[in-house]
Length: 301
Ligand SMILES: [Zn+2]
Image (tube, rainbow, N blue to C red; front, side, top):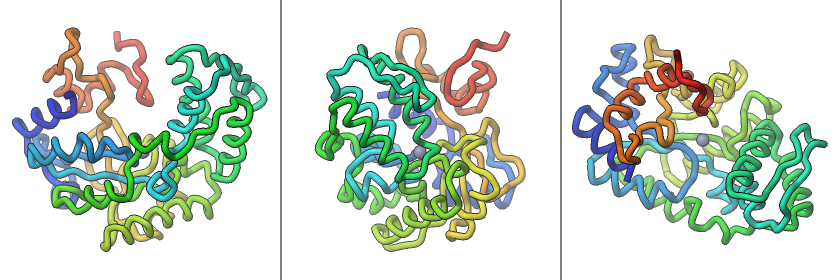
């Protein structure tokens, strides 16, 4: 499995530390030594307990999970997985969303369904929850598909899974909002609600205080000064973004993480490539492959 190959490689060649230790090192030295790594994962998927926990236990690898609590509270997923389930559950071959500023989508094949889910969830991430719900309800009617909790049981982390995860000594839990929305696009009261209710629920389940937060999506446009002030006010001491470089000089509310792109360390024979992975964790992958927002563009000349 790719994740195991990545963790085994990191454990063999580097020092794997918890996020608390990494932050302490950053605070002392302003820059993390190049052979020190802290692993972080996001959201609320069952794969955390099924795959990540056993592999990280095997390699004694501490890791942090930034948990979005909507799925824990309701058993229903965020917009992307919900819209994908709609596309997979409908017998319609196409849907016209040009009145929403999108387009007419074909739903004929797997790839088209996936593109549809990416486009629609990309629009919804900027909407307050109530508006999003109204739109999804009408989309269900339009497509005559009505996904239920049971459809997502294997996909999402349950409360029992969460308890097993957070009681492991290797695991640190961080905040990641309730509904995984693009915070700068929301009215400030809704932004506060997203950050606060996530923190309250996680602290109740954990029985201890949360200190770390990761902005949903994590890119430069997923936080601004308003959002940083909210995160500070709600009592988080450090917040994390996705950025292309290693940290130099510590701003506690915009600490960099290196995104590991799926498939970025698979060689031509579809096997794990240590060389490609070494490029990826160095941060050079983004530059080398001229990637932007997680999508591959033409390689640099
Ligand atoms: Zn996320």
